[in-house]
Image (cartoon, rainbow, N blue to C red; front, side, top):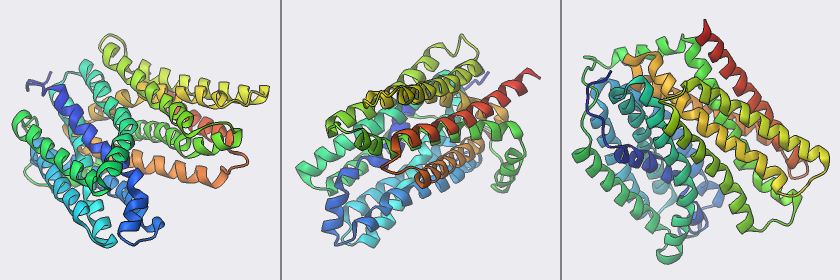
Amino acid sequence: MPSQESPRLVVLVSLSAMAVLPINMFVPSLPNIAKDLNADFALVNIAIAGYAMATAVTHLLAGALSDRFGRKPVALFALAIFTIASMGCGLATDITTFLLCRLFQGAVIAGYAVSLAIIHDTSDEGMVASRIGYVSSAWAVAPMIGPAIGGFLDTGFGWRANFIAFAVLGVSGLYLVAFHLKETKLHRSAALTPQMWDYGELCRAPLFWAHVLCMALSIGTLYVFLGGAPLVAAQLGGTSSAALGFYMGMVPAGFILGSHLVGRASTRQPAIGFMLTGRVLTCMGLLGGMVFVASGWMHPLAFFIPCVFVGLGNGLTMPVANARVLSLHPQLAGTASGLAAAVTVMGAGVVAWLSGLVVNPLNAHMAVLSVMLITAGLSLAACLFIVDADGK
């Protein structure tokens, strides 16, 4: 059992929330940014896609660096880069400077990888999934409230206010880490090179890839929903913007419920059971959506209610899968966390891209449900592989 004192959960949750808020909080400001910086909207939109790429690279580096130099220094360095980059975005007078600073904002994602590694360092096996469940809730709550906050700031103070707010969050994060987070990685390697070789060890582990595949397909299912839901709502008709926002909000609400259940009960129940239950519930919910289509029920709720099971299933799956990835090679917890997160993000992005090749405004309802069901089924297959391996 780890002997280090466990950091306060609010610090880890805050780090995770700060890691995800910059993804979409400023999205309502995109048109104003394009107008103010005299740039095409498509070019400004790179601030989202480019940021996603930057976070994938950061995931890869942050985990290995935290195994080598410690959790706290990496978190402080990442937050410092994020704070400076946020100020750069807020002060930018041309699109090139803005986009460059926006890429460097991606450093903040290291806070999530470091948080997971810290949980592994300071929690016994029965508590890891529970604590990750609470921390993971930030990944559902922050994207729900982020655009509303960003829209308020943009309306009241202009688009630059969003990036001033990010800089303030960065300074707050530096304070929390500097004064309320003790170093938990007590045994570090003497050089960085071994951490690079650790990637090879992880890549040769079938169970590691089974967990990562399960997570990537689970998040990919969610990405398909996020990209396709507006098209489905338009196809079915009669859905106002407010109603669409409410319907889409039910899915992350399901994630919060699932991760909360893991946080409350995973210390008393086998963790793999939550993971398997999450994958089965997701498939059952989406099958129910197909039944609704076959029965002729074309109300928007016929699509959105089944999709709630996507959020619920991911909430049950992701904390457990992350916890198990960390425990496969305990000495490589940070490296494993970073690599798993990077591959999950990239894999989910590939799923979303493939979905875009088959979904269009005319077939959205059936196509989105079908693609989600396929990815959810593949994720269930990966989970069953893990369950079988555990039984051997």
